[in-house]
Image 1 (tube, rainbow, N blue to C red):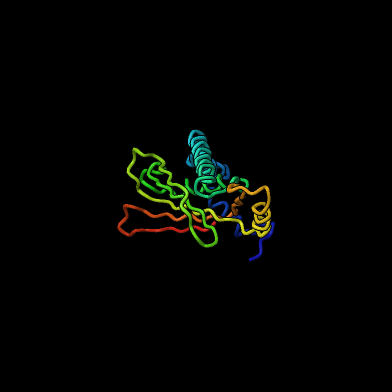
Image 2: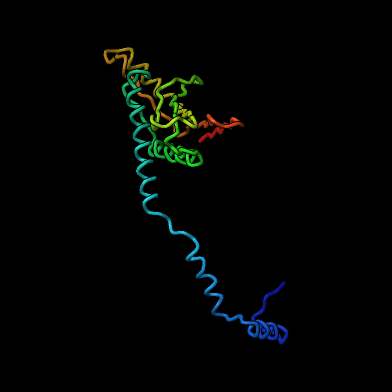
Length: 193
């Protein structure tokens, strides 16, 4: 089909017929204006609440890593890629959005995978007054850098040796596993990011 800029007499007849039946070219604009009223405006309060919730969840994850570095990881520093905890928090909010109690019904198990072994770091209960409806298992991954282990070897040999000298570098990748607790199907969702 080829579109042209001129009207044939047959097309003129069709346009005249439309005008006779009450179609007016101005009504086309009104039809588009209709969607301006039907499509809801984003609720600014919900957007602000979600951003606040995302920030507080990211802070919980950072606190979990901070507490675990000396007690469970045996290191002095944990280097976290920029925006990693915010990305995880956004994914957690997205996965909890389909749950009956939302984020309040979440129990999150935080783990760290080091050389194909998962180490349990902490358990975060989002709201202890709500019976959990789903579990999330978050697995941080260690960055595979050979220079850090090489550097740690030299620091552990000399006068700088200390049990807490090691620096742990996290990868930007992580794994989230969602398990519904009250589902007949027992759905499990695994996301590798």
